[in-house]
Picture 1: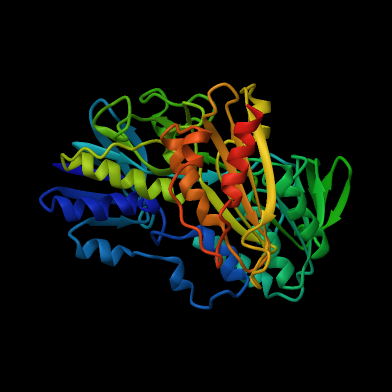
Picture 2 (picture 1 turned 30 degrees about the horizontal axis):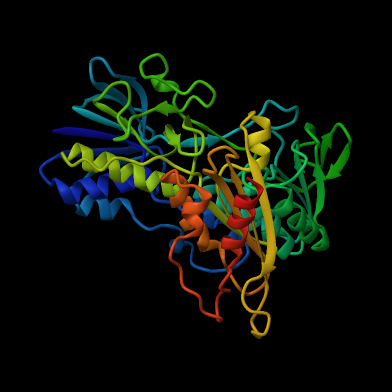
Length: 449
């Protein structure tokens, strides 16, 4: 069987490594536009912050490793056309310009995403950069060390944006964060979590310009000012982290897409509307277990798992993907946060009937010397008491973010608050209370019903 893989970052690398171990007889060719594979973009801010020195740690595989497994790896090759009916792709060698045809029995579409770049006046000025590839990371790292770069503006207050804000603040830069939303990370957390985070950002010297839209980038050749409807902000460097869009134009009109995001609709085995084409990673639209609808949830964890599922299915083994809850976490400005499912704000925006409980408590008996505060918010259906979402946060040395794993599984399985409350968990004064913070929130939700 001839298999072509389009893109070898998290999903593509996961697929080829898994399939090569399962079925060595398959002919696998992997095409990628880049010069490297398996780049951990989540590590960009950590590298900029000097959390580690060797950038090789940002990669967990290489073209050489894949080739040693019998995979035909073609770096700096771009697939420029997909013909799903006649089962071939047209490929451009980016080094030589040569264009050639390659046929497949199965196509694995793992093209990923690309940062959103809005058509803002002056966006072509110098010192305006994206944050996606290792090449971007190298530039950002260099700029963070450049003493001539004093004022940094980050546009976009999602995870990537605020992580870079912290990195530049640690590097001694004056940082301004701009976003059209009225608070940071609104896709993941409600105000009970974003408010204390924003307070810490302001205390660290970050200028927050929430609820503002960038109208223009001003300067001669290089950026000098970022202009919004409310003011101008000095900038020697701008990082755009507005969001990402799936790279699916090559299959528009050939495969069924989720209309809002243009990600590719798939079944539980990652097959598209054409069963010989699989979509994995950020290219795919996945079933969200909180809403029961397909959604574009671009996370490395989902990319790796969808690559596994597709590889097993091509090998003749059914390992159905169970859907997602969008589980994520962040450690930023002393806030250790995690979330799963949907937030109260999301429910209000999308007219989903929901109630919520917020609970803040000591994380272990007050007489323990290591006691610290922890907080939790749960979102649930008031009629069925089915859990829809949860957020957990702590602010000291103690980390409780991994407790989100249990609540993610509860959402995946459609569990109710009473069912979760009675799960058998341990009590140990070193770590929790007999009536721990999760149980208290669940009981409060049950009592409100």
